[in-house]
Image 1: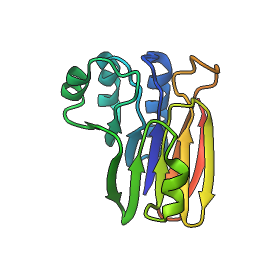
Image 2: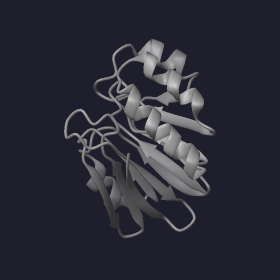
Image 3: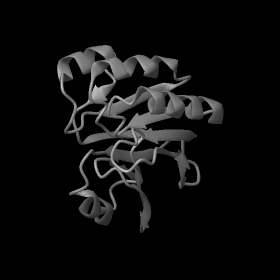
Image 4: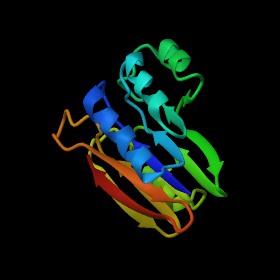
Length: 159
């Protein structure tokens, strides 16, 4: 199963739309957002996805009640833990616990955002992914990640 990972869209409608188009073109079957949508209107674009999505709240997400409503219940508080294709996944926004979670060996995939810098790393049997910033506001580079859950390989995609 191919999953798309996005974070830190920060209301950038143009780049968010590009990310969704890239996910649809690649045949992504599930999308995970690692926080910082910022405003509820950004979620209108996610209706264009050809698959289900889930996400978490980030530190810049303002109206959480309206974000939750507009997401139709697809946004959760962090950390959000779930299983997909027999892979244990945890999604955080901030990076402070990532190393400890990886050392624990409890998760197959750790996803985080917040730093706006794309990052891939493997610690033992755990894959760590930060897709970077889709919004491109901080560093001017708009990126997302794609993970193949079958072979646990990941790549960063420039939008």
